[in-house]
Amino acid sequence: MSKDAVTSQHVARKAGVSQSAVSRVFSEGASASAGMTEKVQKAAEELGYRPNVLARSLITGKSKIIGLIVAYLENQFYPEALEKLSLSLQERGYHVLVFMATLTDDNVDQLLDELLDFQVDGIVMASASMSSDLARRCKKAGVPVVLFNRRQDDDRLSAVTSDNVAGGKKIAEFLIAGEHNRIAHIAGWEGASTQRDRERGFMQALYSAGVSLFDREAGNYHFESTQAAARIMFSKKQIPDAVFVGNDHMALAVMECIRDEFGLRVPEDVSIVGYDDVELAGWPSFSLTTIRQPSNQMVAATVETLMGNIEQGKAAPQRIEIEGPLMIRRSAIIPRGWNNEKL
Image (cartoon, helix red, strand yellow):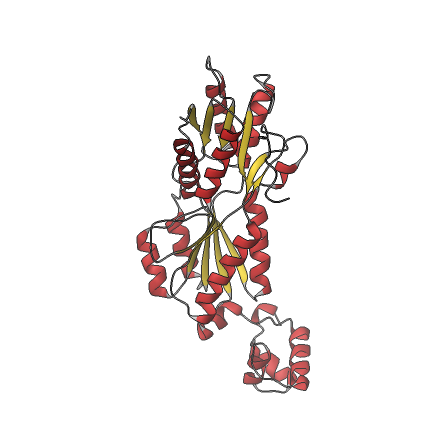
């Protein structure tokens, strides 16, 4: 018998039990005796039977699948954080279905359409946003959506981020305390809420201290684009003595560029500060001063928010911002009296 043709009826016949007994054995939380379970599982193994989870979801209304849309894996922060997210959801009995989007969100609506066709129980969007029309459709379908490391102005959507405004302020205050006179910024993708919030906090702190931004370029969260931005910035007659770069991935690109192509020393000639605290940031060759995104707390908050909607019916959207510490290393001049907030 072909394994594709094996059904619960065949298993029931071989085990000498009813079809409903087979269904109970393979249904989570259903009641079945130890003896019956052993007979059914033995028969299923001999026949090569596997229950059709997707078909059962049409009956139960629960697929135990979480759709994950991610748009930006170049940044080491996302593979690390999404691994933690997947493992945490698996511990809760859910499986993760991953879809890749573009950073500019051009294909997100199409991907969400496909995810809804898979009858997912919930959706997590990492580094991506959704249209108001799809937000409405998800709400109508009863599929909760949580934005991870991204937020948008839509009251129907929950979002979990680090406190990007506070992080930007900390970086500006650190560089000002280091007595830098020419503080610049290389921004990420302008359409990302993370970029806008980090820059907003950074500029607020500069303004409060009476300091003007010396120069600004955009790297759009890409390594090559960031190095091109650095070449423009450091080819001018007067160059910055400190640069806040929108994330660690770009900050490492800037460090390599100015060291290799311009012969500048970090931090003696230029202080460099990033954002995320990816694993590479702590390597001795980089020793990057940066804001640590508290990924463990962000993942926990995302899972709890999602489960609150799916399992407990909590409908109120959550907007969660978790503050991260400034990790002081050797890529920036350390002001007198400053120490790491957290090791």
